[in-house]
Image (tube, rainbow, N blue to C red; front, side, top):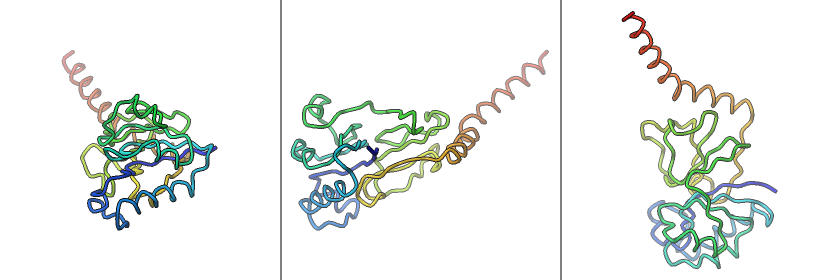
Length: 196
């Protein structure tokens, strides 16, 4: 059994082809190709975390899910406007907006999470930004992995990190998140000591 991640399939969304310059001539072709790509890597007993924007408005969710391999967990995105109960009774299992996978040291979300809110030693695997770069202040590339379909070749991917890579992330996280707080604490301590 393997674990895969994907976001922003937007099944049934015609305009997403134009918005994100997807290589499909129409929505029917896009849906068919996304299903084909999905099933080319995911087996029936695999787990897929879909990080939001699964399908557009009136898409037939049950029909789509029946064509996709694997057990699918969904973090709802801004285009997944139906109720949790709706998705849960149509073949998907909705999970919390921010979900930690401890053994892989990742936190899942639809929208990128600011560096300061990512637990130390974790990476944020997310969607939402499609093929746009992550450029906002407070969002470092080292702590984020986008799995929108446009940047992962339109098929779910496995995300894994070696112990060396995780150690590098912990050190990087210290410099980004903890060190400024520590420096502020030291400055405050020096001010108090100076008043004694």
